[in-house]
Image 1 (cartoon, one colour):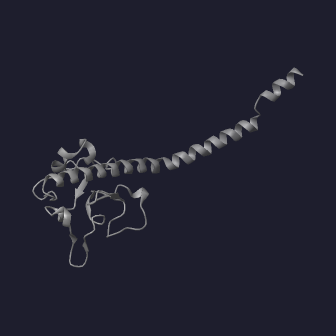
Image 2 (cartoon, one colour):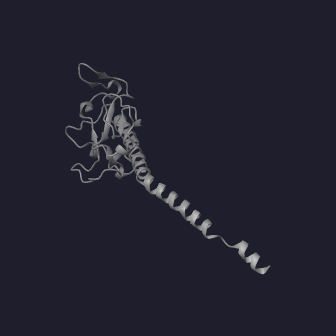
Image 3 (cartoon, one colour):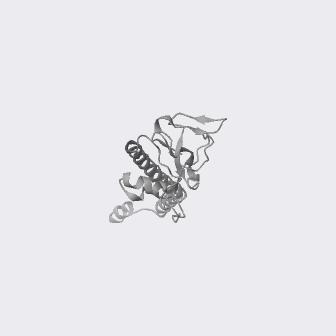
Amino acid sequence: MNYTARHCAAFSLIELLVSLAIIAVLAALSFVSYPLVMEKTRSTACTSNLRQMGAALHAYVADHEQRMPNVIDQNFREILEPYADRGNIFMCPSDPHRKWGDGSSYQWIEGLSGQLFTSLKLGDDEMVLENAHDIPVACDKGSWHRLQVKPSRKNGEEAGFNYLYADGSVGN
């Protein structure tokens, strides 16, 4: 009787092997999804950086008679940095280079330089964007977010980039 009680309290070899197999399958699934999760995390930090740059841009515009920065004469990071809460918003966490000459992972859309913020226009004779939600102001310098690409793009934007729009919204 004592032998039977001890026998019921232990795991059988098959139960242990099944448990180990389940753990191995779950570990394999998590290793496959890990790069996607990490890229999504970096992309979220990137969009947060762009939102903060948007807030800095709106503060700059408010201080400069509703005019967009003139980035032809000066680096846009140097222009917006005094208006930013923290300095590292100009580096995208997904940027593999992190050694750009201007110290930023983002590029400014130069066609907007010096324009009046209340009447922004971007485009050529065929397509003019006038809605602030449609006008990109800045974007990644490289397509670092390709793991989470959405199939449809608007206004000729390239896949894998995060964009800051004139109204302060961010999209990818």
